[in-house]
Length: 401
Image (cartoon, rainbow, N blue to C red; front, side, top):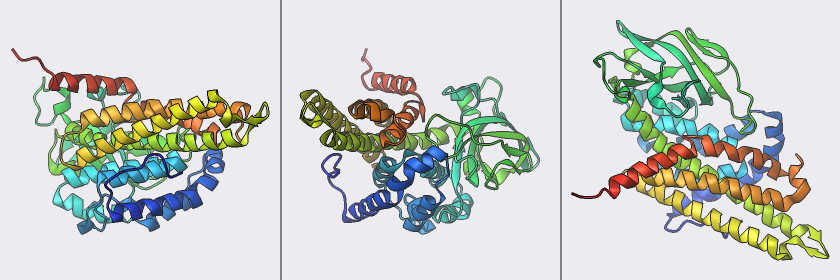
């Protein structure tokens, strides 16, 4: 499909990259996605293909061996990949949040050590904020780091790590009270640690255990895990940026990128749902004509296409604002909120167009119907987005006097 979700003002390089990614999605992802998803199988061949395309280095600067592309290019690539299978976009998203955090906040030694291997996909990133009891309340983190000589000792349990098993580098946010007097605001006593580990499950380094994959309703294939730290010793030079107490700000900067990514995923899944719906509506006949000729179905298609266009425009705007160096938490929150809600609605309308066949695992829309809800809660729930949006609006529109 080429008519919807066009992006004006792209360079020739951006158009070439997107054309390559779309061709890869059409040939290598869509034909196998549903079968792999039903088996909850990690898509190793697809990941190897993404490595060959250089996508793991898409936003990493050229001086570290990456392509040095913008957040907009990355978001448009994610949109294409999610159109094929949302789980694959999750495999590269966490990688890029960690690479972005390293690029923006890492020491020179950390950048030199990690980014060239991340660009090649040899080191694969994951990041971890959430814990079993806190959900979106990051200030309630209980995992803790205590200084011990030239090292820190980390203890605690983290939750909802995308790529927890397959990653070899995890950026973990924990509480670190060192140098911060009692009564310090919670967000000022948090530190991000860069933890290297072996890929796999079980005890992946002394003091660090990845128990296994969490069984999920959708978003299968990609591994989502817990992470348990029990006396995990990390050298002081693996504090992101070399300074404690900056972790909350570093993670929130990364999450702004992540929210643009979730918006892009919503756009991609919605596009695919529209493609499936408009195609099926022209093939299925009732009462002597294709159901696409019934006004009730045409109204659905019109609403679906409008939502696809609106979500795409907001996602592009949020990415471009971040690329310009401006604060984009308002735009990213709006884009993530709208795109995830519209994605759910477009998928449901495509499901309804399919009628009884939408309930069959034989049809792709069944998979999309289970995947869409993850976007309503990933990178902060819809309710959290509305809180962020509301606070920012009150900052912008504060009454004077």
